[in-house]
Image (cartoon, rainbow, N blue to C red):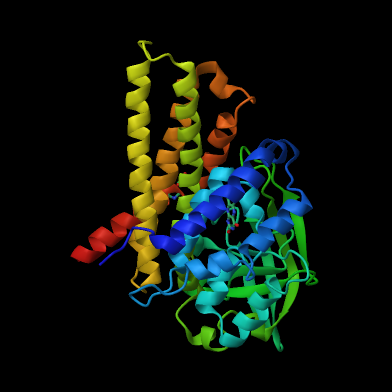
Length: 392
Ligand SMILES: Cc1cc2nc3c(=O)[nH]c(=O)nc-3n(C[C@H](O)[C@H](O)[C@H](O)COP(=O)(O)OP(=O)(O)OC[C@H]3O[C@@H](n4cnc5c(N)ncnc54)[C@H](O)[C@@H]3O)c2cc1C
């Protein structure tokens, strides 16, 4: 039976990460937003927190009574708490990032060891990234035009990827490219490109509405040569139906966590507005009942989003197909978190738009969460397909 209660170990993890978020992230959030950078010592601390050495993280994921590891639950609990601290700074956590699920889910055992260990070699903060989006292929991943041609004993990658989180500094980059543009999604495969590979260069760095402390890059591949064994899944991947499925599997694994980050931003705005209201709106004020009703509605929606995130994560941990549930969490959480930010700004009146408070920053940050990892509209399309597919 589905278990949404956290249990002792996950509660300890949540409390540990909450203290980190409150002490290390929240106080630095405004400076990071204004400068667009996260101090190297904070990156090092984020790395130590997420790395293998963090006993709390690995302990929390150990198999429970039903024998399943709780890695997905750990991810959603951690994402909510850390994003409550600052959602932009945590996109600077060293580690495999979005390259992780692609390599872990579709790579050969040798590739998992070689490429994932490279990100965890412990010598310096290292990053992974996933480059799928192109100017004409965001929601419609089947329209990817970046090509991978077999040439002698290796591959030649050509094309341009846009809006890649941590793309400029990625040590291990997973790129979605096609062997045959005319074949649409069935021609696509995943490739690993290591930092410094000739033929790959960083284009523009985006200046964004929100999440300004997270780097988002354009990446250009111009005759970029890769060894044959950088094809994710190895030779067997050539016979497999498509790398597109690998990309989608990776999204099923990562969407609950991304949704939980959105939830963390919404909760931050909700708690801030509630605390502000408690001190700034007198108990006898005629505004008070209206604000109470509004806060009540926001809390209810955030609680529902938390259930959706945990359900999708629990299913992943129990090896139950969770594509629809991951999309439900991703469709819902950013939307209600955006509503929480709007409510916070409106409850606080003009002060809500002031840089004296973080509420206006959360409002800018949250919008992006409704865009990346598949927009809200696309999640609703996926859910609809599952519903009708079941009836066919
Ligand atoms: C800050 C940031 C970081 C990102 N990081 C990464 C990353 O690390 N790696 C990566 O590969 N990409 C990344 N992206 C790209 C992101 O995943 C895409 O922007 C997203 O998938 C949407 O694609 P698009 O921008 O091409 O929009 P489009 O696909 O052009 O969509 C435009 C609008 O049309 C709507 N729409 C499109 N098709 C449909 C449909 N069939 N039905 C209903 N509505 C539809 C969309 O919902 C959207 O509102 C990032 C984006 C941002 C903003």
